Length: 248
Ligand SMILES: [Zn+2]
Image 1 (tube, rainbow, N blue to C red):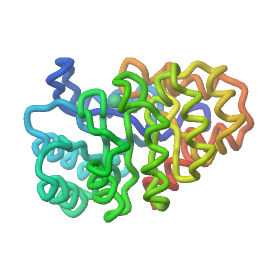
Image 2: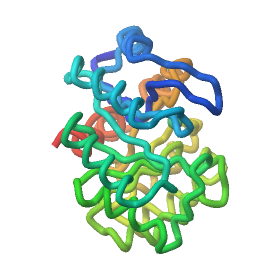
Image 3: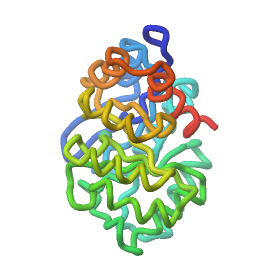
Image 4: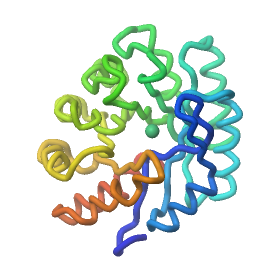
């Protein structure tokens, strides 16, 4: 709770990233959440790891120890055999209660337009898990508009466009969300005037807050407290939309 607002950070990471060298423990994340008044976070593995199952177990144990603070997401290399992919999604749900599937196309170059990539969306839909997609860096497969076809093919599956296209492609997020009511936008990396442009087009019950990394928590979440927004919009972005997606 911060300034009277419940805060749900829908984009954080726990684990060891081989591509960046970043190491972030559950304790690091929880300490940061306490410092900045974040009530709950979605904890996601990094996209390039030594052992994705071990990363899921690390997050799963943290979720089990702090069920009131953490929600788990899996992130699975998309080019392993499809049966292994599905088995791991199922294991994450049944063993650890995970509530999302992450795709990071900057490091996991799965073509979202190809029918070859259906399996990932099918696996998420089977367990009623939203798909969180990194968008922005990593073009072309991280372009927000490329997820419109999958959103139409899986109309009951929420697809969250992480980082809102990394600001450069934020207008694609507006278009994608305007034409697909199951597309959500997570607003990290955007400046306040970008956010106002998005709120003019996308209903607040499809907008989410996220920080991505611990150093950005204050800036990424504090911006919603500082900027001028209608109160219901502010509360939707900071908590209500995420609650409806991840806690029901
Ligand atoms: Zn991230």
